[in-house]
Structures are given as structure tokens and as C-alpha cells.
Amino acid sequence: MGNASSMLTQYDIEEVQEHCSYLFSQQEIVSLYERFCQLDRSAKGFVAEDEFLSIPEYSTNPLSQRLLRMVDGLNFKEFVSFLSTFSARASLQQKIEFIFKVYDIDGKGKVSFKDLVEVLRDLTGSSMSEKQREVLI
Amino acid sequence: MRFYRRDLLDISPVLTEAAGAIVDDSFTRCFKSNSPEPWNWNIYLFPLWCLGVVIRYGLLFPLRFLTLILGWMAFFTAFFPVRFLMNGKNRLKSKIERKLVEMMCSVFVASWTGVIKYHGPRPSSRPYQVFVANHTSMIDFIILEQMTAFAVIMQKHPGWVGFIQKTILESVGCIWFNRNDLKDREVVGRKLRDHVQHPDNNPLLIFPEGTCVNNQYTVMFKKGAFELGCAVCPIAIKYNKIFVDAFWNSKKQSFTMHLVRLMTSWAVVCDVWFLEPQYLREGETAIEFTERVRDMIAARAGLKKVPWDGYLKHNRPSPKHTEEKQRMFAESVLRRLEEN
Image (cartoon, rainbow over all chains, first blue to last red; front, side, top):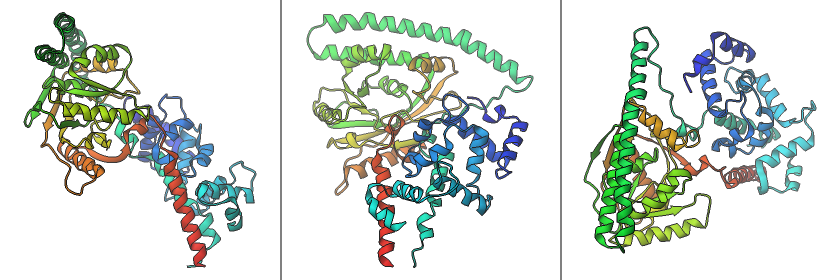
């Protein structure tokens, strides 16, 4: 595969860094690029759904399907931007906005009762009845 | 502690876990082959490297290929007559076939200039024992087979490898399995048990990881080999990466390409340790026994242990894991509600 950073020029790294508001250091971006290339097995330029699901730790996460809708088909720049929310340096505002987007997965701009129940359903599966969930919310 | 709605809605731990898995996970690490650092980057190293390439591809590879072809021809001219003309299952026939297979494997090893150091007592052929080893490539089998003709349990492969499996390996004793067939496991378990009990059978070699791993980690061992009620003799194999990375990434390369890569490298250097036979201890479960032997092999070969099932390389994890997480979350929520 070759040395990953040789495929990323300094210019590329700076562009990606700017796009994620400098939340990652250049070294971190290089490591993320290595990881991105490892996940994108057929070198398409984005990571497909089944490639994410082939990570066992990801696949067993209850919110994996919901997150997939946000992360599927992102190119590297967008991938880094997506992950930058999880950086310790990201603002609380950014993190809350992200959680909002996870709930409001169809991008209506507001979180409905249905969204809340859906997320709770993802988290509890068959261990809680629909009634219980609705009562809870 | 009051249970706030906020606690219920705060999904950040779950999201962080998912993001963590995207960034790095211990499973894909097991199958990563580190790309070799290029050292030919300046004016006097580059011509040296070019010279190396010319020698490897122009001189070594043809010589090795020739050795391999001659070896195969010698093997077949001796093997087929013995196989089909000598009658029955007499001892002499088995002995000759065994020696021929060992010879053929030595030819293979020579074709990659294999430098293999064996440590520890050589395996002896007696019943009620099974050998287990960590798995990096199909060449593990060839390396061990050149020393003793083991019987082996293998996944059926297509192409010329399958042909060899069918014709030659039958003579040393082979058990077939199909990874994708669940019922197969019982049938195979029974065949294994039958095999170890018969004193005339060759010692059985099993790779309990079930898949090739990159020789830096070990994945979970399957406990089938440890439930046969006999001695388990661990074998640890460690390849020296400086010369060539012997990991066979079956998703990236066919076995033929893998062999070509080995034949165009300088050498295949590895250490093989035959460790002390282990027995199931008083009060130990099969799983504990499996883990104990895995610890031994990992410690000896300097491998890191990883708690994943090797078959996840080909299959998705069973939904039971997700269901378990969901159950735990649901229970904790309901419990906290009751407390209020």
C-alpha cells in the first residue's frame, strides 16, 4: 500500500485541517488517513456501509445503523470533519448539535416524539416494549 | 439519585464508543500488514535496491521456480506409482508416501530459501495427542510438514491447491471442514476424536484460530481441538519480518501470488517452538484450557492476544451481542425508574 503520508501532501493536510476547524493535529490527520485507507478496501475514495459493518466493535453498537446514515459515503475531508466532533477540543455546542443531528436523522430541523422513541428503540431493542418506551418519553 | 430525562436522552457514551470503533479497533489490527518502509530513497541506496530487484526477480526467482518444478516432477514420478500400484493400506506404502510428502515440503521451503529454526523436542507419532499452532499463512503447514508428516484439518480450497489437497494430502490423513456449515462442526468433532485414537494415524495438526492472522496478534482459539480428551502439544511460529512478511491476507492475494511474493524475496526466516504437551487440569473448563494454551503460544512467539473470533473476518457478529447491550441498557433504565 505504500507509506500513507506520501499520498497526502502538506497542502492536503492543511486543507483537511481547515475543514475540521483545526480540531485535529496534522499527525492525527495522517493517522486518520491511514485508517481511512485501511477501511476503504477497494480504494474508492469513501468507505461503504458494509466496510463499516465489518468492524465487529462498530457492528455491535446499538446506534450503528443510525450513524451509518450520517457517515456512509463521506470522502476523507468529510470523514475527518465528522470525527472531529468527538475530539476533546470540540465545543459543547458542537457536540450538542451532533447529538441533535443523530436524533433528527431525516434532517427536518426538529426532534419529534417519534425520533425520541426510535432512538430509545435502537438502544433497548426487544428488552423493552413499545408501550414502555412511549411512557418513558 | 434522581433520574432525569436528560440521562435518558444523553446518547453520547454510545456515540463515542461507535466513533472509537471507527477510528481504531482491535480486530482489524490483527489483519493489517504493515507496509515495508522504503529505504531506497537516496542516490546510492536506490541503485543498490535496483540491483537487489534484478537479482531477486532475474536470478533467484527463476532458480527457485526451477527447483520447484524439478521437485514436483520427482515427487509425482515417485508418488503416483506408489499410490496406485502398491496395493492396500500396508505400512510400507504409508511410510513411503509420508517421506515423499516431507520431501516435497522441503522442496517448497527451499524454493523460498527458508531458514527455519526448530526448538524443542520433535513431535513423536503416537496416539492421544493433537498439535495446535498459531496461523499466519498456509505455509505454516508446509514448514511443519517438512519436519513430520502431520495429518491436518483444512478448509477445502479451489484451484490447484484443492487438487493437491485431494490427491496428496489424503495420504497423510486429512479431515475436511466447511466454515459456513454449522452442522459440520459435530461431524468434524467426531472425525477428530476417531483420528487421535488410532495409533497408525499421523499426528494431527490443528490451527485453532481458524483463519490467517498477521503474526503480531492471536485471535480466539476454537475449543474443538481442546475437547478431545487427549494431550495438546502447542507449537508457536514466529516469522522474522525483516526478510519478508509471511502473512497471507487471503482477501487481498491468492495463494499463488503469495507464493510468488515469497519466491521473489530474499528469504523466509522463522522460528518454530515445540512446547510442552498440556493436559486438561482438574476443575478446568475446556475454554479455560484453550485460553491457557493460547497464553503459552502468545507468550512464546511474542504475540498480543485479542478477544475476537477469527471467523468475524468473513461473517458479521451475531446480533446476540447487540441484543445483550440493549438488554443491559434497558434493565438499567427500568431499574433507575423503579428507584424513583
